[in-house]
Amino acid sequence: MSYVAALLPVAVYIIVVYKLDSFSLVSVKSLIFLVSSGIAAALVCFGLFSLTGRIMPEKISDYFNPIMEEVVKGIPLFYLARQKKTVFFIDSVICGAALGGGFSILENIFYLVLGEQFGIGTVLFRGLEVALIHMGCSAVISVALMFSVRIAERFKSGLSVKKGDTVMAVFLLIVAPSVHVLHNSLHAEPIKQFIIVFGILAVLLIWLYQYDVDMIHRWLDRGLDKQVSFLMSVKEGQLGNTKTGKYLLSVKENFPQDVFFDIICYVQLYVELSVAAKSRFMMRETGMSLPLNESDKELYLSQYAEFKSLERNLGKTAKMTIAPIVKFYPADSKSLDDLLEECRK
View 1 (spheres, helix red, strand yellow):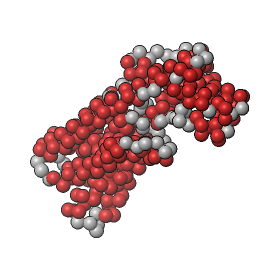
View 2 (view 1 turned 90 degrees about the vertical axis):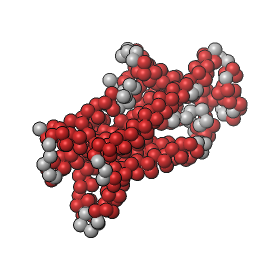
View 3 (view 1 turned 30 degrees about the horizontal axis):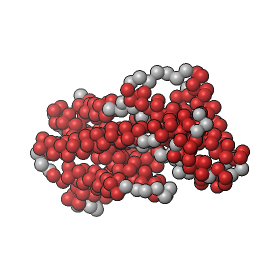
View 4 (view 1 turned 90 degrees about the horizontal axis):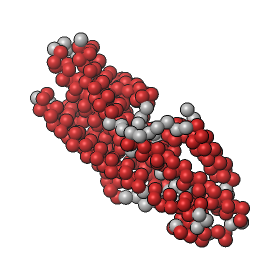
């Protein structure tokens, strides 16, 4: 019964956080993988602390251990961000919380096996607190790493980097382990300590969630109208009616006619796939996502195959010329991957 009481809060937390994913960004399979990764991270930390505990005073451990726990948990989260598996605030929060939940599962079990015997109420409350601190801090770390990868990619691409994004990433990377250290070093009354930690994490995560909603809608709105206008201008043979079309016409003389035709086709396919991917994403948001019919699936897959074929055939000069237009940000890549995966089912 004690084990059930210790693990129940973790399961509740994970389910609640997962239900926040109205966009279906994280699959159940990914969630299971993340919880397992959290358990593995707890094993690594347990072995590490078994060694450091022999030479490190308990007072220093209160500061060292939580920082190392966040570093170890951050490794798989950094991998997910680097592979563009987490590209929005909400999927970063979900992945971080799931991994932190796995970590707290094993920590609670260790506590029951190696610790003193306590009543069901104490075990339940401690399980609630441990799950909160690990899931909350890991969620914040996950968001910070997603920001860091995004900033690094923009910097490498020569694109502008907002100072606010950099400040946000650094702030989150500092505040998450700081809250964990505060939790381990307070040694206050359990209820008071829980309220303090819960208050800090709740305010932080609610703020991040609201920012996520705003960011998603800005991403959906960014360029969508321009992309639709460009498609209309291509179909009507009036490229000069849009800024994108004017830019393409300005470089027309730099390429042979057949190459310029391939460039127009390549950009058109990019825009069509981007609009389709964003449209499917918006439909999932509103709960109106109906299954794609077979003809649409075949259309999108054939468009993508043609898009990749043209990409291989275009020379370096052509690719550099259209680079300002054909830009796949992490969110764009994620939505396109989701669309293609849906088509292949």
